[in-house]
Amino acid sequence: MVSLMRFGPNTSRSASETISKRGARAMNGSSQTVPPDADSRREAVPGNYAERPTFDPGGGPIRIWLYADRISYRPGDPIQISVNTNAQRYSLEIYRDSANRKLEFRRTGLPRTWSATNVNCSEVGCDWPVSVVVSDTERWRSGGFVIRAFVASDSDGVVAESEHVVIIGPTRNRG
Figure (cartoon, rainbow, N blue to C red):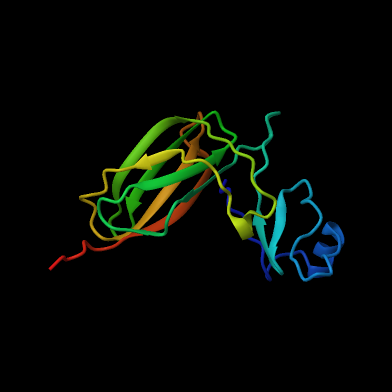
């Protein structure tokens, strides 16, 4: 189960169904709506929905989300990763995305990190604390890297996962 849920023009919900379920928009032009319903979806911008993390300690579905502090880095720059999950433990891996994926970083059994998420996180950010810092990126070749956080199941599968892409650029020539 992937924790990222996308809703757009090809979904089964029509705009009128969505507005009737969420209430009318504020008249000042803001995209704020009434609080999200039980399925945790929220209109991020008109016609585009983003999932907003909610914590269910009572045994709801396991969910996981992540983001990095930046989109692009130079070799040697630390990557600060913020993870939000309701699972007790999760794993994190980073691989260089290419025809032959190369695993650069892997940690398993990381403890849960959970933070409340702003209702307007799509506008102001999530502001979650840093969960993991990857500082040994000096030897990574430039390219696209996929950061994958996941919760493994007891039967050797994955219960929930989330991915984020970052770029490692070339080393700067100083001359």
